[in-house]
Amino acid sequence: DARVTQTPRHKVTEMGQEVTMRCQPILGHNTVFWYRQTMMQGLELLAYFRNRAPLDDSGMPKDRFSAEMPDATLATLKIQPSEPRDSAVYFCASGRDRASPLHFGNGTRLTVT
Amino acid sequence: GIQVEQSPPDLILQEGANSTLRCNFSDSVNNLQWFHQNPWGQLINLFYIPSGTKQNGRLSATTVATERYSLLYISSSQTTDSGVYFCAVAYSNYQLIWGAGTKLIIKP
Image 1: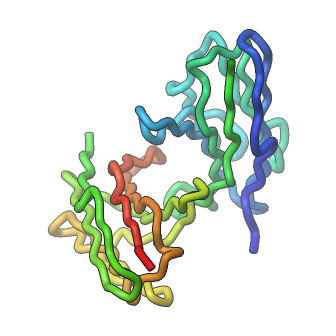
Image 2: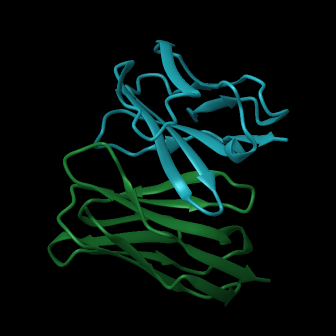
C-alpha cells in the first residue's frame, strides 16, 4: 500500500536548537498538509501546499516555523529556534486533490526540553 | 464557520458488540471524512463520504447531507477497534474542520 512517510519518528532536542521534520507524500498526490496534535489543542493545521506551492501557512508561528516543498517527493517543516511549547506530534498528510481522502503519515513526536 | 459535533464523546463496549458514532455539522459540506486514531497514534482514513453510504468490512458509514449528519457503524467490534474516531468536514476549500472525536474502548 502507498503511504505517507515521515522522519524522524521521534525527536528529543534542547530549547533553542533547530528541528527539521521530513515528509514524503504519496506519489501522485498534489496536496500536502502539516498538522500538529496536542492534548490541549487537538489537531491544528499548520501549512497547506498544492502542487508544491504554499497556499496557507497562517497556522504557523511565522517567526520560528517554516515549511517548504523543494520537490514533489519531499516536504519539510523546520522550527528554529525550538521552544518547549513546540512539544507535540507533527503529522504530514497528502491527498490526490482537495476533494479526496486525506492520508496521514505516522507522525513525528517532538519533545523540546 | 462550520461547527462539527461528535457523539458520544466516550464509549466503552464489550468485544463483539455493535456501535454507532454520530457526526453533526452546522452547514453544507462537500467533503466529509472519518478517521480512526489508534492507541499508537496512527491516523487512518476510514471513509471519504460527503454523501451516501459506503461499507468496508465491519465498518460502514452513511452521510445524509441534507440533514447535516453522518453515522459510522462498527459491527462485531474487536479490541483493535479501540481508539479515537474523528469526523472532519469542509466546504469548497481545503481546510478540514475536525470534531472533538469519540473515544472508543473495546474490552475483551
